[in-house]
Image 1: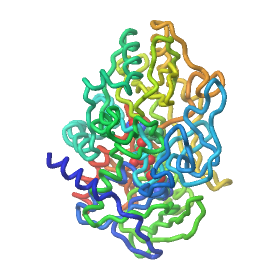
Image 2: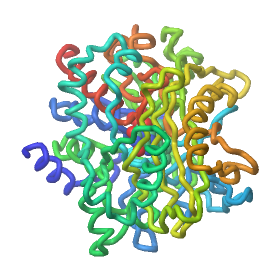
Image 3: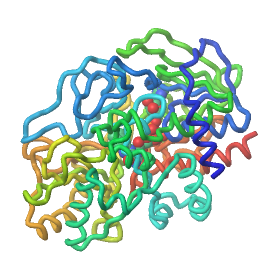
Image 4: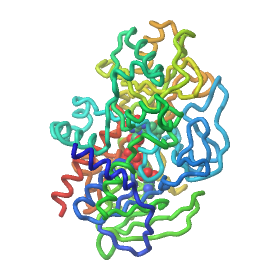
Length: 520
Ligand code: FAE
């Protein structure tokens, strides 16, 4: 109860407008990025009395556009949708095999589709990172799998202390299961559940950070709709407890937090005066640099996400700014075994014109050692009946990629090839072939390309690149560089077996507690 009150009080404050960070400033703690790892670091540092600056390349999404909304919806993407693109790059980019992407003005929008050789990596951009764009699913990984992926971490303390702490801080809530059974907006999930169960699979409800009480009112027509108005992936105007309303708002309430938006960190190196020199470009809304600043920070927390942190650290090592970073920096990247797929239902199996953008159910076939799958039953909120069942499958793909410095382009690439996702397809195919056979249904092959069943070339779940107890010590400290820490999804070795943000948050809670008690 106390925790809930704190959360709500903090939410009312919201994150203050971007404060100017001046060239030459000296700050006790600087956090690069404002997603899950960054938000936990911001809260725990400020609560410990340490003045903290969060530097975020994306915008502070708190000002409504000309339509009165901060964010655009999924059906009408405008400039607010994508990060510096002139056409949208929708995860479902086709319908009936025909491309459905459209032109948009170039702008620092909220969702980035970052293209590497063999994969597009979707990431949130803005104060709140991925929490602004994601589906809000808050899933604690299976205990045995967590122990398998991070063997150096004490599992009991994670499940007794840090996962509960993360869930409380994030404002996680459970769906009213009786309401679920009757709500029009979850007809699509009930159809997929019935088909999965009739084919021998187990389903499970998923917790979420979207306020299910608010969603009930949306369904009842008494509040402005968000999840029920095709809002997801480009932000939610209502209902979602994104990090700017939880962890970051609580950090702001201490009076010790400064959030500097639209600043992209480009370099970190030891400063001759002590601590680290952090260089950043201040950018405008078309991505042009308007100022370059260097500040000195006693401690730097890398929270730029799996891709952002890995790219920065690999570049700093290659450029001789942090030359002693271990070889493991840049290694161990994975896509959490992501693969998307869709099935075509029979005409009598309607999935509903009204679909909640926040998934609430998954098919749990993780125990199948021949091909573990945890598949989220995803919405297709097109506003019209389409008879489509969509899934995001999380699988145990053992393949990993690495980030490497390309001296001719002066940039960091990711070695991952699309073919490395074959194990993910194989595992998902076992489940969905079985469902199709039992239901006498077929795959949709027109949504991810022309005649393409498996969306194997994109991920929502980048993980790894700076793996705990390999590239860092067992608490995220970068060896050889006292005062440098990694706190985000790059610590997790490519896979969590479920949607990752609760794991990222809990691990950050664990590591920050240790760092604040022992690193003076
Ligand atoms: P992240 O949240 O990505 O934050 C990193 C931040 O750093 C971003 O705000 C960047 O703009 C910023 N940044 C990067 N480089 C720089 C730089 N050089 N200088 C300054 N700032 C920088 O990292 N996960 C779930 O658990 N449940 C879901 O339902 C779910 N749905 C998703 C749906 C979508 C469409 C997407 C894209 C992701 C989804 N995820 C979901 C994944 C989840 O959002 C992701 O794992 C976390 O956001 C990663 O947290 P990090 O703290 O690692």
